[in-house]
Length: 96
Image 1 (cartoon, rainbow, N blue to C red):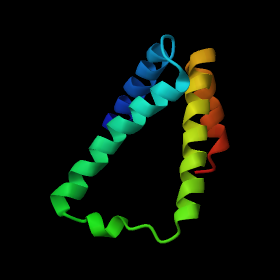
Image 2 (cartoon, rainbow, N blue to C red):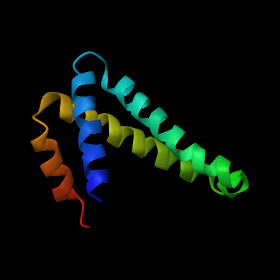
Image 3 (spheres, rainbow, N blue to C red):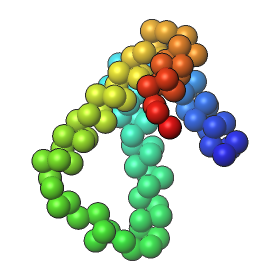
Image 4 (cartoon, rainbow, N blue to C red):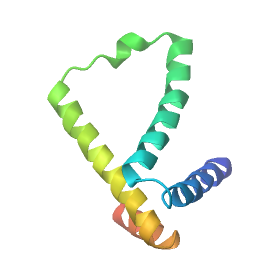
């Protein structure tokens, strides 16, 4: 748990530095591509590609659009505000 919090804090600090030079959509794309690599490795190791078949493509498309919108908004907020302000809003918005 401690290592996950450490890695996420490093990632968000890197997002803040990158957002000074790149558009929030580009920073979001870089973050998503690095996450995709981390996800594809265990899937390839287990050879469980068939479990990823889409049953409701429009619902997945809508979910993906919401995810991209949320991530771009977060990167934009991290760029414009101090790092503590978007985190406090993010943690206040999550009920868990």
